[in-house]
Length: 494
Image (cartoon, rainbow, N blue to C red):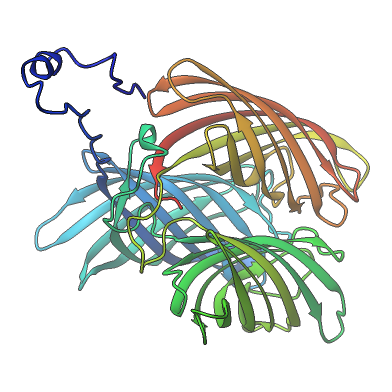
């Protein structure tokens, strides 16, 4: 950003400085960054699919759609098995929706979804899932509820089903800044993005009870809203198995918790309690239909400068299944925005959201063969300075005969300065992967990537990356080629 100095004054100001010699001429104060105001539509739905042999499977979904203009909306969506015998089936992808306004506060929503995934030995073939849906909704107070008709098909598999479903959605504000505002003070005008104020990395252990006594290690993450020193907080969490012979196990849950800081001014330690409900399965875990619940208690310590860590003990149970396990977890969290009691004290950070396609050239399978596979995914990069960024990624197979293969990664990268023209970067990530017959061993993997990006607009880029993925305790070793579309924006920061 160009700064005015005493030898570089705007021409309109310099004459006044000469005439008004008795007055000290100061540079004009920089304008406060202006937040852009938008909305997002958050939706949840449930439908029951009919699989081969007249098997029934409940499928729950969640989506976050952004307005494109002209009644068009688009955004990410995730589907997961919620009843039946296919717990652990997950599909992630993107949805495009066109809305039609009807009389008496009704509307009709026509949508298309495409994504990749699978699990629980469901006949999904390569994993590509397509869905077409028509949904009729009406106001229910601040929400909208309705009835949908959809057709779900896995083109390379054996699932093709038409069904009715239930839908609930609500709109919430989405505030953000231009990415060029990164590094400037954040105005005191509320949270930005989806409203999450804290992001944590988690390492957990499940000690199963009953006939299955495995000790399963998981890695994952958690995002929280209302991350205040004390009080109620909500959030979402996800984790995947990285050890214990359960490669392919994955869970996604919503949680609510309570945090109490007895002596905030003298002892930065808090007592916490948390409960969560959601979906999980895969890796031979006995979740049956997929619904699970967790409760935990623990303690955390505030290290200052927006960092907090904690430990917790708890219990996880299957809802309608035999899953029972004691749990232990350690976590490290960073505040994404200033706390609610100190608004406006942060600095705007640059964030980059990417939709990705990856091609694995030689993915080793458990039967000893090797073949290519393709994944669809999403990544979020948050810059901590001009060049260093932290990255969270998720990918799922949609081609290559590896339906159910999914990947979760966290790590860091370095990139050249943003702007029009070409950018270059490199990243190193670690995480968990499994399913689809891919030889990931215990599930722990590492991935490296170098990439080049070309600006499509001042806010977006097309990127091409090349790298490699390797299982730490398995035979998977493969070169990876990635194509990504990236959108940059400014969000609140510490």
